Length: 282
Ligand SMILES: [Zn+2]
Image 1: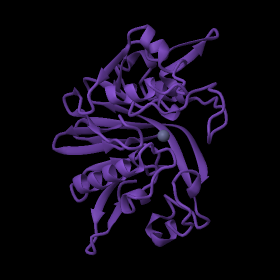
Image 2 (image 1 turned 120 degrees about the vertical axis):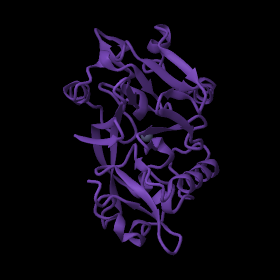
Image 3 (image 1 turned 90 degrees about the vertical axis):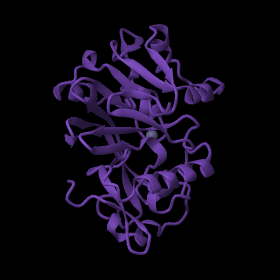
């Protein structure tokens, strides 16, 4: 298990699954040499054959006063999904083993409403989908909800409806302050209402990306869209603003789909180019 300390706040990564994918299986590019142009991405973020590892994990932000879970992965027993077989993982047990049994989580942040971020919102008990985190407020941005609620093909019956039935959802703005030291930050483009999550404590800062990037190469080449980006131009603008905001600030950038070491710093070189630096952070 991996954890980072930001001031007095601890952020734990709870891994659900890692899957090896082709670049074109996740990003809108047919440039097979893309990763080779940035050899420093290897070995953590790319293999010579153009494949890379996509990680699915949740992140617990423990401020001492609050236990906030950012994204709940795919979940067990979900019907077939684009890049993963039906899962039967020990994710919930792993979360509890870290000291976070489900009833101890007070807040769930859904960065957006794609299946691999909201799956464990519910679990199947006696044939019925019930809230996994019964004491948690589940935060969803209004823009995100409005987008999916107007999509006839969206299937949120298993993952969101049980929460709505129990009154566990708060629809919030995309700059919502969750608590002292934790706030949402708008990151539209992948989906209209997506947010990143900013964590600050003791003069230190981390930011959890959500799916504004799926791979660090998108920091360097922000126009490379994710396959699932609903608005590629807006997503690219979000990536540019993100790099401008956080490069050379010492902010720990934690990738929602980055495999280990998962977190790094954005640094500009003398040529103005950006690197995602993980050395010394393992
Ligand atoms: Zn995702």
